Picture (cartoon, rainbow over the protein chains, first blue to last red):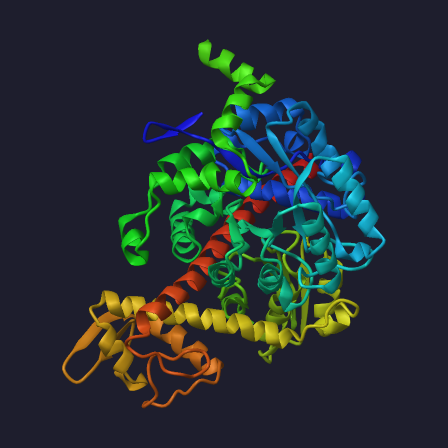
Length: 344
Length: 249
């Protein structure tokens, strides 16, 4: 549990994974390249005491996840951003099936995201419906840079993507997390563009689009779009990890987001297990914008803004009543462990 | 060719996205010279660095070195990248990007390059304006100023109007702005306004605060990306060293 100004904060980690990046699961050299690249991100921004050995990073246990998020990481709930990458990993990297193992054990702790890929075509509609029927899918995670059958990416504005978004509307899935972070493909300039989000957000006003990694390295383009579109949100994963070693950059990013996007539309995320939430949440609770930045942008990261970002905004998007949810969580196995921990 | 001169040529090659020299960023691992032949080994911050940017940098190295008459052949080795083979062989043979990725590269690379030249321009413009403001130049003076008012001397530069002189700022800041402005084909005559948008229109005094806020987001993005790339490259080098040690054992 973390407090800001003496007040307890409800924390929803808006971006986390339960992946298998072990060599047994590598389909080819790209699987290896993928997990090693993730590990570089881990090494690059983690404080020393939070660095894992590569072995553990490739594949961690359920117990690790429960401890790192809930028992030690101050997190109350997590949003599984399922990622498939079947062309790199035999069983997929962290599919909704894989993440569901934990959802089943601790149903009140997680929000499970599924996905679609417009390149499945109409043939995929049935698969998509079945996924939503069989699993408690409450949101989607879309990865436009995914490789599929010779294609190296797609756009949210593709006609077939629109067909799937219509299906989301029909099935009552409202929250669409979109990876718009560092990308590889497609090769064209679109890889450096977040404008496909703009089209989809305008045409589907009843859906919410949470842009993960705040569009870095396209923060500026993202800001203009989010300013114009009421239903576009900023997911802080990756940016939040700047807090330990590069706080000034985070302050600049936060000031831009607060100015252009506003404190009601920013969602915290750790990107676990690239980074563990403990040190990020603790530092974020204490984090202050430097005076010169406050003055220049005319914004402030107030205790209220922090509470919204850490949990209240995500709770609103997913229709979670925080007081009721807290009561429920106190009773689940993790809640009981936490209570025992505190009593000791 | 002298090693120093060789590195000076490399220094001019920029990462198009970060608008910074690949030498300063630490992307050049090794340079080997044998007579008229040069071999350059590059390593980028991640295995997944975009192949279009990787191509622009690798090809930039080849072109920069071939400008010198002492060099007849350049071999580029891109280490530890998911498209290492294609890019290393392709660039060394002087092939175009679309030839290397025939099924995927529809994009005219030039358009992409231009897009980032403009982002770089915006960041250089903001750095110039901030430096001048810190040196006391008010917005009204900046919006009125002509190019001729920016005067460099040695390491320093000043903004001079009829009554005042604002500065000194570092000449490098002014030079970087002017170089990119010329590269984009924007007016360079003495009478042209000092502050221009990339489309060539002048920034008026009332528009300046808003314009600066927008520029600021571009620059924050650029700096954050640079910081991330530097940190990633640093972790990667450690990894590399550890792996080498392992292999040697």
